[in-house]
Amino acid sequence: MRLAEERKYWVSELCRVAEPVLRLLAARELKKTMPVQSAAGQDRSDVTHLEALGRLLCGIAPWLEGSGGADEEEERLRQQYAELSRGAIAAGCDPESPDYMNFAEGYQPIVDTAFLAQAILRAPTELWDKLDAKAQKHVVQAFKLTRSRKPFAMNWLLFSAIIEAALYRMGESDWDPMRIDYALKQHEQWYVGDGAYGDGPSFHFDYYNSFVIQPMLVDIVAAVQGCYEDWDAMHASIKERAKRWAEVQERLISPEGTFPPLGRSLAYRCGAMQSLAQSALLGELPSSVTPAQARCALTAVIRRSLSVPGTFTADGWLTIGFCGSQPNIGEHYISTGSLYLCAAVFLPLGLAAEHPFWSGEPEDWTARKAWSGSFFTIDHALKG
Picture 1 (cartoon, rainbow, N blue to C red):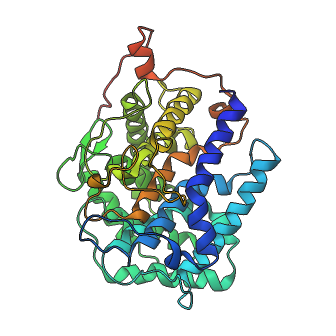
Picture 2 (spheres, helix red, strand yellow; picture 1 turned 180 degrees about the vertical axis):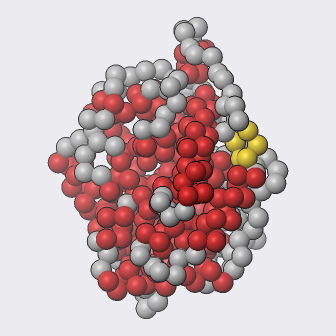
Protein backbone atom coordinates (compact mmCIF):
# COMPACT_ATOMS: atom_id res chain seq x y z
CA MET A 1 0.00 0.00 0.00
CA ARG A 2 1.41 3.39 -0.99
CA LEU A 3 1.84 5.96 1.78
CA ALA A 4 -0.93 8.29 0.58
CA GLU A 5 -3.29 5.34 0.22
CA GLU A 6 -2.56 4.20 3.76
CA ARG A 7 -3.71 7.50 5.25
CA LYS A 8 -6.75 7.49 2.96
CA TYR A 9 -7.57 4.01 4.24
CA TRP A 10 -7.45 5.25 7.85
CA VAL A 11 -9.69 8.22 7.00
CA SER A 12 -12.15 5.99 5.17
CA GLU A 13 -12.37 3.61 8.13
CA LEU A 14 -12.81 6.54 10.54
CA CYS A 15 -15.66 7.90 8.42
CA ARG A 16 -17.20 4.44 8.13
CA VAL A 17 -17.31 4.14 11.93
CA ALA A 18 -18.37 7.73 12.62
CA GLU A 19 -20.86 8.56 9.89
CA PRO A 20 -24.12 7.04 11.16
CA VAL A 21 -23.62 8.27 14.72
CA LEU A 22 -22.73 11.85 13.85
CA ARG A 23 -25.11 12.28 10.93
CA LEU A 24 -28.16 11.12 12.86
CA LEU A 25 -27.26 12.83 16.12
CA ALA A 26 -26.59 16.16 14.41
CA ALA A 27 -30.06 15.78 12.84
CA ARG A 28 -31.46 14.91 16.31
CA GLU A 29 -32.65 11.52 15.11
CA LEU A 30 -30.18 9.17 16.84
CA LYS A 31 -32.43 7.78 19.56
CA LYS A 32 -35.22 6.89 17.17
CA THR A 33 -32.85 5.27 14.66
CA MET A 34 -29.82 3.67 16.31
CA PRO A 35 -30.25 -0.05 17.05
CA VAL A 36 -29.32 -1.02 20.59
CA GLN A 37 -27.68 -4.41 20.83
CA SER A 38 -26.78 -5.57 24.33
CA ALA A 39 -26.26 -8.69 26.39
CA ALA A 40 -29.26 -10.93 26.93
CA GLY A 41 -31.60 -9.48 29.53
CA GLN A 42 -29.86 -6.08 29.63
CA ASP A 43 -31.53 -2.78 28.73
CA ARG A 44 -28.89 -0.13 28.04
CA SER A 45 -31.12 2.26 26.11
CA ASP A 46 -30.74 4.96 28.77
CA VAL A 47 -26.94 5.14 28.44
CA THR A 48 -25.90 3.79 25.04
CA HIS A 49 -26.31 7.02 23.06
CA LEU A 50 -23.94 9.01 25.29
CA GLU A 51 -21.52 6.11 25.03
CA ALA A 52 -21.54 6.37 21.25
CA LEU A 53 -21.03 10.14 21.28
CA GLY A 54 -18.29 10.36 23.91
CA ARG A 55 -16.26 7.38 22.79
CA LEU A 56 -16.40 8.18 19.10
CA LEU A 57 -15.35 11.80 19.57
CA CYS A 58 -12.62 10.80 22.01
CA GLY A 59 -10.97 8.91 19.15
CA ILE A 60 -11.54 11.23 16.20
CA ALA A 61 -10.95 14.53 18.04
CA PRO A 62 -7.26 14.97 17.03
CA TRP A 63 -8.18 14.54 13.37
CA LEU A 64 -10.96 17.12 13.75
CA GLU A 65 -8.50 19.51 15.39
CA GLY A 66 -5.79 19.08 12.76
CA SER A 67 -5.36 20.81 9.46
CA GLY A 68 -2.59 18.78 7.88
CA GLY A 69 -4.61 16.43 5.73
CA ALA A 70 -3.21 14.68 2.71
CA ASP A 71 -5.36 16.52 0.15
CA GLU A 72 -8.39 18.73 -0.42
CA GLU A 73 -10.80 15.81 -0.15
CA GLU A 74 -9.56 14.91 3.33
CA GLU A 75 -9.79 18.55 4.41
CA ARG A 76 -13.35 18.70 3.10
CA LEU A 77 -14.22 15.58 5.10
CA ARG A 78 -12.52 16.91 8.22
CA GLN A 79 -14.49 20.15 8.11
CA GLN A 80 -17.70 18.25 7.41
CA TYR A 81 -17.19 15.90 10.35
CA ALA A 82 -16.13 18.73 12.66
CA GLU A 83 -19.40 20.51 11.91
CA LEU A 84 -21.37 17.29 12.41
CA SER A 85 -19.55 16.72 15.71
CA ARG A 86 -20.46 20.14 17.02
CA GLY A 87 -24.06 19.53 16.00
CA ALA A 88 -23.98 16.16 17.74
CA ILE A 89 -22.64 17.65 20.98
CA ALA A 90 -25.28 20.38 20.88
CA ALA A 91 -28.05 17.83 20.29
CA GLY A 92 -26.90 15.50 23.04
CA CYS A 93 -26.56 18.22 25.68
CA ASP A 94 -29.66 20.32 24.91
CA PRO A 95 -32.45 19.52 27.40
CA GLU A 96 -35.03 20.41 24.72
CA SER A 97 -33.56 18.01 22.15
CA PRO A 98 -35.23 14.66 21.42
CA ASP A 99 -31.68 13.26 21.62
CA TYR A 100 -30.86 14.82 24.99
CA MET A 101 -28.71 12.32 26.80
CA ASN A 102 -28.73 10.99 30.30
CA PHE A 103 -26.10 12.73 32.42
CA ALA A 104 -27.91 12.61 35.74
CA GLU A 105 -29.14 9.06 36.41
CA GLY A 106 -27.04 6.00 37.22
CA TYR A 107 -23.28 5.56 37.15
CA GLN A 108 -22.54 4.83 33.49
CA PRO A 109 -22.99 8.48 32.39
CA ILE A 110 -19.94 9.41 34.49
CA VAL A 111 -17.87 7.19 32.19
CA ASP A 112 -19.08 8.58 28.90
CA THR A 113 -19.21 12.20 29.97
CA ALA A 114 -15.53 11.64 30.73
CA PHE A 115 -14.84 10.40 27.21
CA LEU A 116 -16.66 13.46 25.86
CA ALA A 117 -14.54 15.64 28.16
CA GLN A 118 -11.41 13.94 26.84
CA ALA A 119 -12.57 14.66 23.29
CA ILE A 120 -12.94 18.35 24.09
CA LEU A 121 -9.46 18.43 25.63
CA ARG A 122 -8.10 16.80 22.47
CA ALA A 123 -9.91 19.21 20.14
CA PRO A 124 -10.53 22.39 22.14
CA THR A 125 -10.86 24.61 19.08
CA GLU A 126 -13.19 22.48 16.99
CA LEU A 127 -15.25 20.94 19.80
CA TRP A 128 -15.37 23.79 22.30
CA ASP A 129 -14.30 27.20 21.02
CA LYS A 130 -16.45 26.86 17.89
CA LEU A 131 -19.57 25.80 19.79
CA ASP A 132 -22.10 28.59 20.13
CA ALA A 133 -22.71 30.09 23.57
CA LYS A 134 -25.97 28.21 24.09
CA ALA A 135 -24.37 24.85 23.35
CA GLN A 136 -21.41 25.65 25.59
CA LYS A 137 -23.80 26.46 28.45
CA HIS A 138 -25.60 23.15 27.96
CA VAL A 139 -22.34 21.19 27.92
CA VAL A 140 -21.20 22.75 31.19
CA GLN A 141 -24.56 22.03 32.82
CA ALA A 142 -24.44 18.42 31.60
CA PHE A 143 -20.91 17.87 32.88
CA LYS A 144 -21.78 19.21 36.32
CA LEU A 145 -24.75 16.84 36.59
CA THR A 146 -22.27 13.96 36.94
CA ARG A 147 -21.03 15.34 40.27
CA SER A 148 -24.04 13.90 42.11
CA ARG A 149 -22.61 10.35 42.13
CA LYS A 150 -19.38 8.94 43.53
CA PRO A 151 -17.18 7.01 41.08
CA PHE A 152 -15.94 3.55 42.00
CA ALA A 153 -12.45 3.14 43.49
CA MET A 154 -10.75 2.00 40.28
CA ASN A 155 -10.04 3.59 36.90
CA TRP A 156 -13.36 5.40 37.34
CA LEU A 157 -11.64 8.00 39.53
CA LEU A 158 -10.08 9.30 36.33
CA PHE A 159 -13.51 9.86 34.81
CA SER A 160 -14.46 12.42 37.44
CA ALA A 161 -10.98 13.91 37.21
CA ILE A 162 -11.00 14.47 33.47
CA ILE A 163 -14.48 16.01 33.60
CA GLU A 164 -13.10 18.56 36.07
CA ALA A 165 -10.01 19.09 33.89
CA ALA A 166 -12.32 19.90 30.98
CA LEU A 167 -14.34 22.30 33.11
CA TYR A 168 -11.07 24.02 34.02
CA ARG A 169 -10.26 24.31 30.30
CA MET A 170 -13.75 25.75 29.74
CA GLY A 171 -13.03 28.50 32.24
CA GLU A 172 -15.41 27.34 34.96
CA SER A 173 -14.33 28.91 38.25
CA ASP A 174 -15.90 26.12 40.32
CA TRP A 175 -13.86 23.29 38.76
CA ASP A 176 -12.93 20.87 41.53
CA PRO A 177 -9.18 20.28 41.95
CA MET A 178 -9.83 17.71 44.69
CA ARG A 179 -11.39 15.25 42.26
CA ILE A 180 -8.28 15.56 40.11
CA ASP A 181 -5.88 15.39 43.03
CA TYR A 182 -7.48 12.25 44.46
CA ALA A 183 -7.40 10.45 41.11
CA LEU A 184 -3.76 11.35 40.42
CA LYS A 185 -2.51 10.49 43.90
CA GLN A 186 -4.51 7.28 44.13
CA HIS A 187 -3.23 6.02 40.78
CA GLU A 188 0.30 6.74 41.96
CA GLN A 189 -0.45 4.38 44.84
CA TRP A 190 -1.81 1.80 42.40
CA TYR A 191 1.25 1.81 40.14
CA VAL A 192 2.62 -1.75 40.05
CA GLY A 193 5.75 -1.23 37.96
CA ASP A 194 7.05 -1.61 34.41
CA GLY A 195 4.61 0.99 33.09
CA ALA A 196 1.46 -0.68 34.44
CA TYR A 197 -1.16 0.49 36.91
CA GLY A 198 -3.56 -1.60 38.91
CA ASP A 199 -7.22 -1.05 38.16
CA GLY A 200 -7.84 -0.22 41.76
CA PRO A 201 -5.76 -2.03 44.42
CA SER A 202 -5.26 -5.10 42.21
CA PHE A 203 -3.61 -5.50 38.82
CA HIS A 204 -5.91 -6.83 36.10
CA PHE A 205 -4.45 -8.40 32.97
CA ASP A 206 -6.66 -6.58 30.49
CA TYR A 207 -6.50 -3.50 28.26
CA TYR A 208 -7.74 -0.90 30.74
CA ASN A 209 -4.29 0.64 31.01
CA SER A 210 -4.91 1.56 27.37
CA PHE A 211 -8.68 2.03 27.28
CA VAL A 212 -8.62 4.50 30.17
CA ILE A 213 -5.76 4.74 32.64
CA GLN A 214 -2.66 5.78 30.72
CA PRO A 215 -4.39 8.04 28.16
CA MET A 216 -6.46 9.88 30.76
CA LEU A 217 -3.51 10.37 33.11
CA VAL A 218 -1.52 11.86 30.23
CA ASP A 219 -4.35 14.15 29.11
CA ILE A 220 -5.27 15.27 32.64
CA VAL A 221 -1.79 16.38 33.68
CA ALA A 222 -1.36 18.16 30.34
CA ALA A 223 -4.67 20.00 30.75
CA VAL A 224 -3.93 21.26 34.27
CA GLN A 225 -0.22 21.90 33.85
CA GLY A 226 0.88 24.84 35.95
CA CYS A 227 -2.00 24.65 38.43
CA TYR A 228 -0.17 22.87 41.25
CA GLU A 229 3.51 22.01 41.69
CA ASP A 230 2.82 18.49 42.95
CA TRP A 231 0.76 17.71 39.85
CA ASP A 232 3.49 19.07 37.60
CA ALA A 233 6.01 16.90 39.43
CA MET A 234 4.05 13.81 38.35
CA HIS A 235 4.11 14.73 34.67
CA ALA A 236 7.48 13.17 33.79
CA SER A 237 6.80 9.79 35.41
CA ILE A 238 3.31 9.59 33.87
CA LYS A 239 4.80 10.22 30.42
CA GLU A 240 7.56 7.64 30.88
CA ARG A 241 5.11 4.99 32.05
CA ALA A 242 2.81 5.72 29.10
CA LYS A 243 5.76 5.41 26.75
CA ARG A 244 6.65 2.02 28.24
CA TRP A 245 3.06 0.84 27.96
CA ALA A 246 3.03 1.86 24.31
CA GLU A 247 6.17 -0.24 23.86
CA VAL A 248 4.44 -3.24 25.43
CA GLN A 249 1.42 -2.72 23.20
CA GLU A 250 3.52 -2.62 20.03
CA ARG A 251 5.09 -5.94 20.99
CA LEU A 252 1.68 -7.51 21.56
CA ILE A 253 0.73 -7.02 17.90
CA SER A 254 1.33 -10.25 16.04
CA PRO A 255 2.87 -10.47 12.54
CA GLU A 256 -0.71 -10.74 11.23
CA GLY A 257 -1.99 -7.68 13.08
CA THR A 258 -3.85 -9.58 15.80
CA PHE A 259 -3.45 -9.13 19.54
CA PRO A 260 -4.30 -11.43 22.48
CA PRO A 261 -7.96 -11.54 23.60
CA LEU A 262 -7.11 -10.81 27.23
CA GLY A 263 -9.44 -9.49 29.89
CA ARG A 264 -12.79 -7.78 29.71
CA SER A 265 -14.30 -5.30 27.25
CA LEU A 266 -12.83 -6.96 24.17
CA ALA A 267 -15.76 -5.60 22.18
CA TYR A 268 -13.87 -2.29 22.05
CA ARG A 269 -11.74 -4.01 19.40
CA CYS A 270 -8.81 -1.92 18.14
CA GLY A 271 -9.50 0.71 20.82
CA ALA A 272 -7.29 -1.56 22.91
CA MET A 273 -4.33 0.04 21.14
CA GLN A 274 -5.14 3.58 22.32
CA SER A 275 -1.90 3.92 24.30
CA LEU A 276 0.26 3.16 21.28
CA ALA A 277 -1.86 5.47 19.13
CA GLN A 278 -1.67 8.30 21.68
CA SER A 279 2.09 7.96 22.08
CA ALA A 280 2.45 8.24 18.31
CA LEU A 281 0.19 11.31 18.26
CA LEU A 282 2.14 13.06 21.01
CA GLY A 283 5.59 12.19 19.65
CA GLU A 284 6.29 10.08 22.73
CA LEU A 285 7.08 6.71 21.19
CA PRO A 286 9.83 4.63 22.83
CA SER A 287 13.21 4.48 21.11
CA SER A 288 12.52 0.89 20.01
CA VAL A 289 9.50 1.96 17.92
CA THR A 290 9.78 4.34 14.98
CA PRO A 291 6.74 6.35 13.87
CA ALA A 292 6.49 4.38 10.60
CA GLN A 293 6.77 1.11 12.51
CA ALA A 294 3.88 2.16 14.75
CA ARG A 295 1.83 3.16 11.70
CA CYS A 296 2.32 -0.18 10.00
CA ALA A 297 1.46 -2.08 13.18
CA LEU A 298 -1.69 -0.05 13.76
CA THR A 299 -2.78 -0.34 10.13
CA ALA A 300 -2.55 -4.11 10.46
CA VAL A 301 -4.62 -3.99 13.65
CA ILE A 302 -7.29 -1.80 12.02
CA ARG A 303 -7.56 -4.22 9.11
CA ARG A 304 -7.92 -7.25 11.37
CA SER A 305 -10.39 -5.47 13.67
CA LEU A 306 -12.69 -3.63 11.26
CA SER A 307 -12.54 -5.49 7.94
CA VAL A 308 -13.92 -8.82 9.14
CA PRO A 309 -17.42 -9.68 7.83
CA GLY A 310 -20.06 -9.14 10.52
CA THR A 311 -18.26 -6.19 12.16
CA PHE A 312 -20.93 -3.81 10.85
CA THR A 313 -24.64 -4.27 10.29
CA ALA A 314 -26.10 -3.71 6.83
CA ASP A 315 -26.93 -0.17 7.97
CA GLY A 316 -23.38 0.53 9.09
CA TRP A 317 -23.63 0.10 12.86
CA LEU A 318 -20.95 -1.71 14.83
CA THR A 319 -21.90 -5.11 16.22
CA ILE A 320 -20.74 -6.69 19.47
CA GLY A 321 -17.62 -8.73 18.88
CA PHE A 322 -13.83 -8.88 19.02
CA CYS A 323 -13.41 -10.17 15.47
CA GLY A 324 -16.63 -9.90 13.51
CA SER A 325 -19.98 -10.54 15.18
CA GLN A 326 -19.54 -12.38 18.50
CA PRO A 327 -22.43 -11.27 20.74
CA ASN A 328 -21.47 -13.75 23.45
CA ILE A 329 -18.37 -11.71 24.39
CA GLY A 330 -20.39 -8.65 25.43
CA GLU A 331 -20.42 -8.20 29.18
CA HIS A 332 -23.53 -6.93 30.94
CA TYR A 333 -22.42 -3.30 30.48
CA ILE A 334 -21.73 -3.61 26.74
CA SER A 335 -24.16 -2.22 24.16
CA THR A 336 -23.97 -0.71 20.71
CA GLY A 337 -22.76 2.67 21.95
CA SER A 338 -19.95 1.08 23.96
CA LEU A 339 -18.35 -0.30 20.81
CA TYR A 340 -17.35 3.11 19.48
CA LEU A 341 -14.28 3.21 21.70
CA CYS A 342 -12.65 1.39 18.77
CA ALA A 343 -12.23 4.89 17.32
CA ALA A 344 -9.37 5.55 19.76
CA VAL A 345 -7.03 3.78 17.32
CA PHE A 346 -7.41 6.74 14.93
CA LEU A 347 -5.63 9.28 17.17
CA PRO A 348 -2.55 9.58 14.89
CA LEU A 349 -4.72 11.11 12.17
CA GLY A 350 -4.18 14.28 14.18
CA LEU A 351 -0.65 14.31 12.76
CA ALA A 352 -0.03 16.11 9.47
CA ALA A 353 0.47 14.03 6.35
CA GLU A 354 4.11 15.19 6.25
CA HIS A 355 4.84 13.84 9.74
CA PRO A 356 7.22 10.84 9.83
CA PHE A 357 4.35 8.71 11.12
CA TRP A 358 2.69 9.11 7.72
CA SER A 359 5.63 9.86 5.45
CA GLY A 360 8.12 7.24 6.66
CA GLU A 361 8.76 4.20 4.48
CA PRO A 362 6.98 1.02 5.67
CA GLU A 363 8.70 -0.87 8.48
CA ASP A 364 7.96 -4.19 10.12
CA TRP A 365 6.86 -4.04 13.73
CA THR A 366 8.61 -6.00 16.48
CA ALA A 367 6.71 -9.29 16.30
CA ARG A 368 6.93 -9.35 12.52
CA LYS A 369 10.69 -8.84 12.71
CA ALA A 370 11.07 -11.45 15.43
CA TRP A 371 9.02 -14.17 13.73
CA SER A 372 10.68 -13.62 10.36
CA GLY A 373 14.13 -14.21 11.79
CA SER A 374 15.16 -10.58 11.35
CA PHE A 375 17.04 -8.35 13.77
CA PHE A 376 14.89 -6.86 16.52
CA THR A 377 15.68 -5.06 19.76
CA ILE A 378 15.53 -6.89 23.06
CA ASP A 379 13.01 -5.71 25.63
CA HIS A 380 13.82 -3.97 28.91
CA ALA A 381 11.60 -3.30 31.89
CA LEU A 382 11.04 0.25 33.10
CA LYS A 383 12.75 0.64 36.44
CA GLY A 384 11.21 2.60 39.26
